Length: 329
Image (cartoon, rainbow, N blue to C red; front, side, top):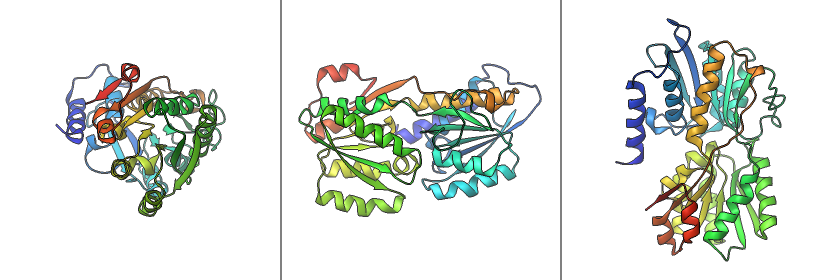
């Protein structure tokens, strides 16, 4: 069964399964807005939505019974967030879940009264979404991606897979306000490991063809892709570029590896989006976003694709395979 069909089946099972607990209050039907950078290809196709639905289900919320879900898809284009957020505000949702830094910023710009649960946001304090992680203030809280120790660790793992590694090309979206800190952390981690960094940036899906043309002429020694709305939604293009040019690449999230990328090390994003449902539950039960501390990631995973390693002519050290949370063969 391919991955999209599996996720669609999983989502259907989530919606059909019996309730684990009773949501409060009885008889109330809540309207939840979900603003995602994903594509409108069915519930299971969005790696953000499926675990969120699972989290809701675990807490006793079921679509059509006590929850109405209003889902809006930016389809990989950050410029769509503003209009989509405004549309959800017009629908008077009880809580608005916004994924990514651009999505959360658009949601905050659209409303100062509707509670907002952010997810997959890089630097919520620096970009002005919250006053502090411990005391968010305002109407926004949720989950951040702040884990600065990951940058050096990720490059160290790549170096273990490619022992002679001396230079890494970092692909990232410079238009995303939350990405600068992640790039700076990566650059700092590379310095500690004695690895040179070459920065290549994109700002929209339209930039990839020109970028890959330039990268083909100056073949990178290795590649690290920072995950955001644009890079995740267009991940197949990056994976194909790396395979075509035999470039070993490491990614921040496992979706790249499941689709054919070499390896990833980063936050367990399924758990991350599932946790967003817990914030929704607390808010619907009366908690105020201003009083709910922003959660930082605690679950991380290493995923390795041995099929891709073989195609690249790489032998992954047994010690690295033993540390992997998942090995795709």
